[in-house]
Length: 194
Image (cartoon, rainbow, N blue to C red; front, top):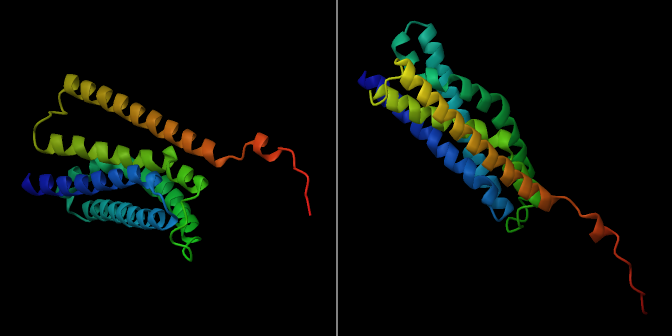
């Protein structure tokens, strides 16, 4: 029980750190800061997915006592691996294009891409699953009782919906700043005086 709790707590701490970094990603002011944060987040989430996959593989090879520690992370980690890491790689490569000018302000399109809900939400849901897994592993919440499980799932659904709406609104606000407005493009040209 102690090993399972320690392993779950370590994975949950890494997932919480990744969620905090994903939340800070679109707040980068320069392209260099955006690239640095995207690189750190990609390494952290990639390492987290690799550790979870390794523990799952170890469970298949006979170390079944480790599997309950990673079971709550399985579905969100798959979403992180297939959805978030790809988008994160695009943001990192986009910010790397400005490597020769490190003090260049972060382009609005890259900040909007960094705030995309499909980048941040799976990472944040993984962190939320980590908190629930630590509470269950510590014995603070009995998820085997149907009434408690129903309350926990309802609360988790509401929290995930709130996080998703928040991420979507932030992405929408940043994407609006990245789109060229037609009224700016069609202003009359003044008379050129020589």
